[in-house]
Length: 162
Picture 1: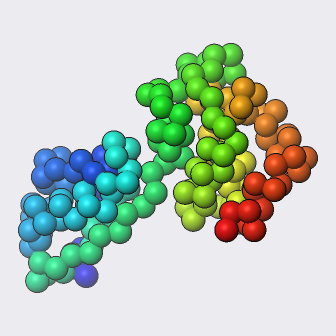
Picture 2 (picture 1 turned 90 degrees about the vertical axis):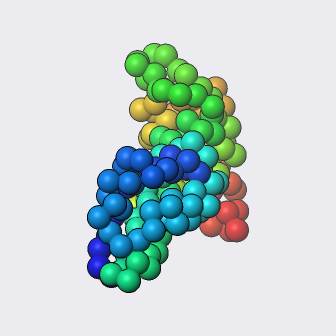
């Protein structure tokens, strides 16, 4: 490959303007083709910031690798809010169900350091703590303690995820 470009683009809404256009302009690729392919591959992440890597050759050929949006973006999208709480331990901005935590953990598991779904869920819960998001009406720290205690093992074992 002649080069690599890494950018964050809004899912399904990339365009030839910044940040893509200025990065792709000097390369031999057709910018509109790259934008179209990125939009096609990121459509499922509509409106979320998605990390994208574009590798290109001197002949104008290219390949695109789409990453998973940040955990906070997945939580915001799932819970339907724009910004986290200014005081996350006092003011809560949204509430997730255990199933929503499981869904986000599955989406992010390949990107996280966690070696299983339960630990991926703990990382998601940690982000909920920072954003001021409760889980089934409970403080995320309390939920994590119950998760550690095995209360939700039936949802967060690898067999349950399959």
